[in-house]
Image 1 (cartoon, one colour):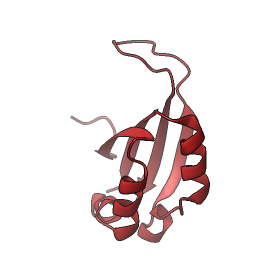
Image 2 (cartoon, helix red, strand yellow):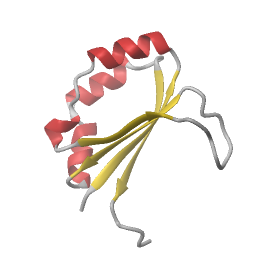
Image 3 (spheres, helix red, strand yellow):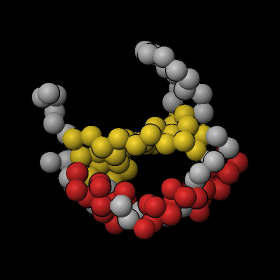
Image 4 (cartoon, helix red, strand yellow):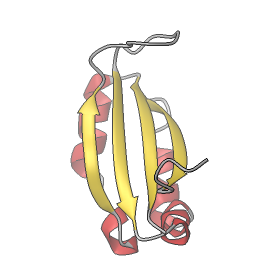
Length: 101
């Protein structure tokens, strides 16, 4: 079953974030991942919180195991270390269960 990694990214240091993105390889493709969406959050329309300097990224994988394999890879773990203090990331694994709860 198709699965998605959904990242909610809060940028803490824009300059360092630009450098991080430019120097970061896209490892998801090695695990069958395909970037579906990457964009700046424009507004918070429901709920509470602050969305200034937030981005959302969505990557589609053939299954949850492939997505988990990415998050356990050396490349991903190294990127986690390098981005500390630059961004805060909330990462969610979502299945494509097409509305059935």
